[in-house]
Image (cartoon, rainbow, N blue to C red):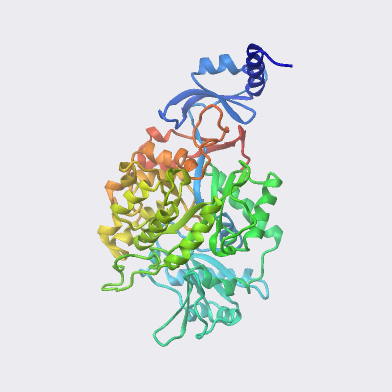
Length: 567
């Protein structure tokens, strides 16, 4: 039977009415500022949710008149602020779960700084919790935030903690680790062991003897292979604890940037799929597979595999190390120690990383590259130019550079031209700004770290992240830091005022622009009709709060698909 145009139009309208039936919203929110982060950056009075999606935003009278029914739940914000759920574009959920949930957490983001002695005492106290045959495994030693400056553990130092229990302690950056002689013995690493591929280094002294310092994750593998693996229940419990902790900060979507980096790609993909199959995650997750954990050029996981709850979208490379760890690849030497000729090192040869990138790029994967130093940024941008060659719309691939720490203005312009979206660890300014300025790279380079201001002026997008466990998840803290650029160590100073942006720009970096970066801006990142009802309720409106106080605003509730997350 052929339908008339009028009848066809009526049926289509009826179908839409069934999907979003006016007068029958599940929940309506009003009574406080509702910050939409739409293109006009509007604030509205009310928002209605039906079947997990936003169906109306506008005035209280209009929304309630059209959408309120007898069974509609009414939420009065009582002056609190409703915003889009925060997007955390760069976290390491699995690593954080292992380091903080199963290991000894030595991280210290407060003052005063630790000393090697206070850190050693914490390790000694933790020995009682190590079972027979176990390892003392910890995370969070940070020489750039230790008194005296840049004090580091040697194998002999850690032997004073224990000669019998193998010790493996990861630096706060994640790019360096420290082991005692027992750990070296069990791992089979000797003075003659060659350095592993991918930038790994077993550091030796002038006489060729191992110091106990390891550089870059490939050097960790012999040690991790000898450690007792956590049980499935222990690991899942730690992961769920980390996911809940992230959700408690108002984050509704996060990107796991190193899938496969701990237990292999297949196992970690299976772990995440299992968690989401049980509806056991309070947040959405986007996954990036760790390049060094995968066979070159092929994987059983397909680009964009998954759904709006869990989706695997990218391949992640680590092109250099840590700036505060003095392993990031710079074009000019570090300022510390004085008269240093060391400028860090690249983890890959140009041809090798390009060949790998192009293979995955051609398959349809988004490419993300960790590049802290300007030499690593140069390498990354040059390779991105090659893989994008002939592509008339490079912006559509949304290639990423993680951290983009030490940089120059020409690199910013080139990145914007290629459609590259960087993500800044803004904690570099907060926790390490004084060290960068006074010691590690000097004032001229330090004032340009995390160049949000330049990206804004050049017409590009940028995002902000924690890189947890490198720093703690806290999007409101990122906003405060991006706007003020105050470093933590007294006397506090503004590091690079030219790179500061407005509160609204910083909010976009943790909402709609972060959603754009991970190909999720069609479903989250702003409060607009048709998008998922993912949002956060805040004690105060960050748009009207003094920038330095935004980090202190309390998160009152996190909502996904219109339902409050139990955290």
